[in-house]
Each structure stands twice: as C-alpha cells, then as structure tokens.
Length: 288
Image (tube, rainbow, N blue to C red; front, side):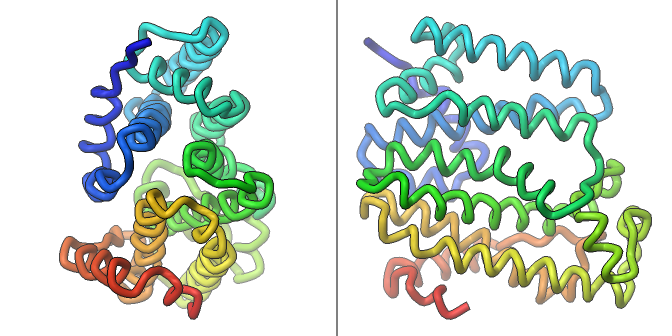
C-alpha cells in the first residue's frame, strides 16, 4: 500500500525547520512516522488558531475533523493527505486512537475555555494538547518498555506546554485568555485581571518565577526518559527538550518581560546548543 508522506514532510519543514533538519538523521520509516504525527497535530491546532474569534466555525471544524478521523481510522484509510499517513502509521505501530481523540478534545478546549481554576485542571489540558503527542511518538521510537516510558513522555509534554504558556502570556492575554490557575494567582495576591492588564508588577514577576521553576522541574523529571529512546531518535527528542527548556532561560534573561516581548531562541544559540548536544550529550541538563 503506497502512502504519500510529502504533505506531512512539508508541514514540519515549514512549521519547524530545526526539527525537520534533526529528523534527517533518522531512518526513512521513523522519519515518515514523525512527519505524519506532526502534520496531524499542527493541522488540528491550526483549525482553532487560524479562526480565532469565530467560535461557531472553530467548533464546526473541530467536530468535522474528529468525524473524518474516526471514519478514516475505522476504514483503515482516508483521502485526506494529513489523515491518511497518520492512520497508516497508527495501524502499523498500534498507536491507540484515544491519543488523537484526546488531542482534538484538548485543542477544542481553547474555543470557549479562557480561564483555569487549578493546576490540576491546567495539567489535564497540557496532557491533551502536548503529552499525547509524545505518547504517540513513543510507539515509533523503538522503546522496549512502553509502560515505564509513558510517565516521562507525559512529564515532558507538560513541561513543554507550560513553556508555551509562559512564552505566549502577552499574546494569549490580548485574546482574553489566561492559562495560569486562579488559585495560584491568588496566592501571590493576583487575579486574572492582573494578567489581562499586561502590567509587569513585582507580584507578577514573583509569580512568573514560580511558574518557570515548576516548568524546569518537569523537564528535570522527564530527562530520564531520553535514555529509553532508540539512539536514532534520541537526538531529535533531545533537541526538542533542549530548545524548549532554553526558552525558560531566555524569559529569565528578559527579566520576565512576557507581555511585550516573546521569548525565543535565536539561530546562533540554537546552533551552539545543537553542537553541545553532539559533543557532550544530554546528561549536562540533569544538573538544572
């Protein structure tokens, strides 16, 4: 059965040039699997992001996407250039269909949910939109003990999504969305309005320091899972781990200015981090 992965490959090449480059070190089989999963996740996310402010349309698109995925999964194929490679990979590697469904559900939460009451509630969201991506990828990573590895994939997904949230505070606030838990804001004498006002006060800085520290702890808890991954794939995941974690360092260097400045890792820094990975490996990050 011929499956066309070209559209999926173009998706990751356009959306993440760094990981597209790193993926070239994997076999074609694993590379295609990564492309298929990435393309599905990116497209699902775009269904909501590309139509911000149009909740009825977003809801319709998400429902239709879920319907088409289930139809394709049940029949074993789809005429959609994104779904067909994903379904092929899922069947080949026995990836549970609950994971794509959780992702769709998580992305759909952004349509109407603008606030979170507790970290437990936020963690559920992080699991759906980020951890399940790692859980899907695990099945093609050559991991012998999937059950043991899952906890690390979940922690890394939460760490990366918390990083996304910290990086995009200003952008999200301008859309009326605050991901920080209300009960934690209250402990620092803050509320949702303080974030929406885009005012960097001393209390906001203390709160952000707390959030950055927690995200780093999740990275620290997830790093042990890297050694469980096949060496062919390890570089790609280690690079993702390293670059995302570095965003937290940039936020600190920017003195927690997250309202008017979006933290990013520049090209020179990416190259240096990549070279460090190639020369020293990833254990250096266990120190932090």
